Image (cartoon, rainbow, N blue to C red; front, side):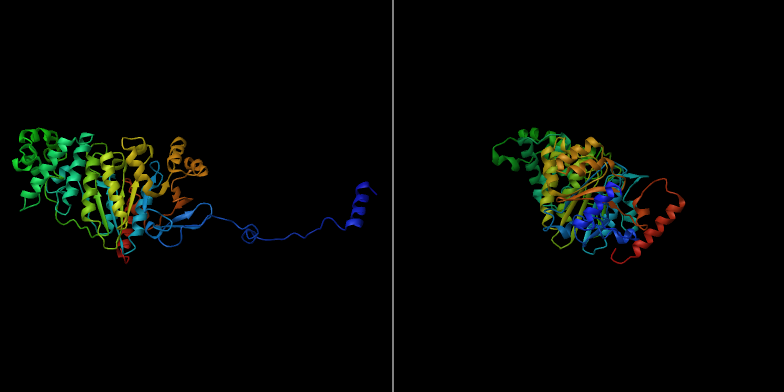
Length: 449
């Protein structure tokens, strides 16, 4: 007998049989997975809008800032980041379509991108039977849409704040005290004297060039001094009346703008996105909406801004929107800012204001970014290391979601009915066009939309 066998025999005699022999078990992976139960971080609940699926657990991912606000979210505002072509636009559009299925929801979109002469939200607006509000300097001169910064629906304080912001954005610096006084005096005079119609920018410009004696004599200041103080302000505002921006803001607000529609789309696609016109335009629209749209009527409102760096990168416009976000939060407003890179805003002239707005965004969705940009984003937003490392590897449609510290990797799911409305490619085939029309009819026929 070999030595090994003697050892085994002796061990068995002293201690009993050491090894047991078990028959093989035939099973399936579905049954065997119960042996090692998977674990996953808790989700956000099941009340709200379905976004897609968590990549690692396979669970459905449901998100709604209004349901989460006050419990898991300190603020309902949302920041969406990522390179072009990775799914930001598709996410925005399906999110809005799904939110509108709730009867107490209302959405405003600042649509800064487009093709074939219309904004990219035009398909969705048409499907819901809504006409986009197209702000176009050329069209406005021929009876197009106008928004009046001096609309009586805006408080006098709001009007003056908006006028200052327009001037500061155009000048690229803050308004000096004397120039600010000249503007304030001109505004007070116009409001007091124009009673038979809406005051307009022309009235402010005329008063700046020809100050009223009664508006300044109590301060012991000569009229010609006030005139010199307000000259630069008049020249800046003149650009909105007779310059390249004329037509959109130099008259009474266009009648018939339906602020009770479930979806309101401001089509800004005809405005040069790199010109000074865009931040001025967004400031005017933002303040106009603040005073005419946000009301204590228990509706939940979403204000979605594409190319939002135009807002966050300007100190003066950012200050206006910072106030809007603080004010709107009490009235059920969720602000959604969509930008390509965080560096577009945190390294700009409005770094302080941008930081304040970013802190209000308790929800952050990050699509694929290059490694260096991902690391910078992770530092600013405080993302965990594992999330930063996978951001450069994300496929289109997959994003890292950080909802007040609850971090998940989520694959966005688009339904067949939504697909032709979401992908606005100018090269659509005839079959795709037919599919889009079918989807529009189906969407319009559904209750609650």
